[in-house]
Length: 357
Figure 1 (tube, rainbow, N blue to C red):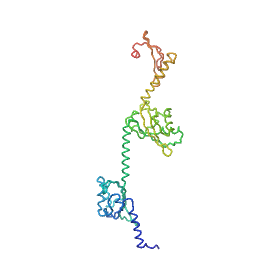
Figure 2: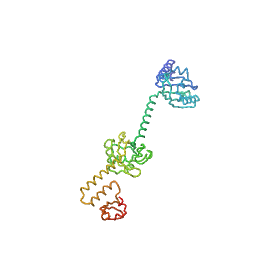
Figure 3: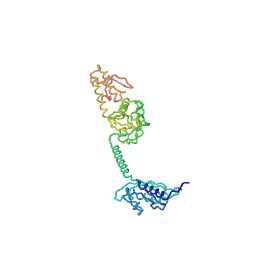
Figure 4: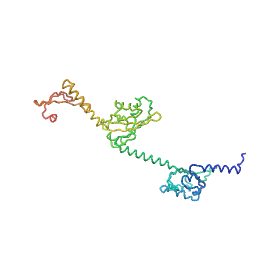
């Protein structure tokens, strides 16, 4: 039969637990069923500036130091606790310390049972979370500033998320295939307007394949290959895409991939519309090629054919002709004609539409 502990042993054990409790980092308390404070750890003074004796002598001090904006939720909790209705409660609220500073407290309270499972009171723990709250608030401000910047930026800004993580060791062709399946999950209105939409929400869920007008454009495939080979970072890379009306548009892109544990998960990008610039470059190239043809072709028919081919790169030349006017005969001759219905070599100027131009 186990011997009962001596009075001295009980005293030593009680002293040990008292020392252990008094050295808690958090502010610990125990309330009996009547709501009276039976124990409060000395760390309350480090957090609130008030000593344990001050709280014991004035139990109302616990709610008196609560910030006015949070007083209602704290007082309601203590009221419920005294009625033995609350089991476990977690609160975050502010207190005014003895020296007038504001601190955030994380408060956790739960029922306490003795060895025979008899309900004997409440234990609570208070932790100073002021620095954590400060960090959270600074992060919130930072996110708000970033969102404001994204929203107001004239550049298109977007976030693509892949349907499934893509191994960076996968063959480039397979990576490109998977990237094309990625979908826009965030964007700004500027991005949407570049495709003919009004709001960013209208392009959420669209795949890269949809925006590129397919997955077989060699220039776009080359752009994605270069991005992968450059360790998923690229600047001023051009892409040829399609707006909501099927028109060709060109963008200059800056793209950064997010890789974690060897897998590509998503990509952030910015883009500017360079359609007008690309169109001007194309016109300049066509004019140069036509000018060059004028010096290298041997006859008018070949020259007209070259003109049709060059213009066909920017407009539909299915029905197209070049007409030369003879003032003496008031007739047009046609060195080059492409028409789905007619086959003419000459026609009278008369009141034809061509005559007015």
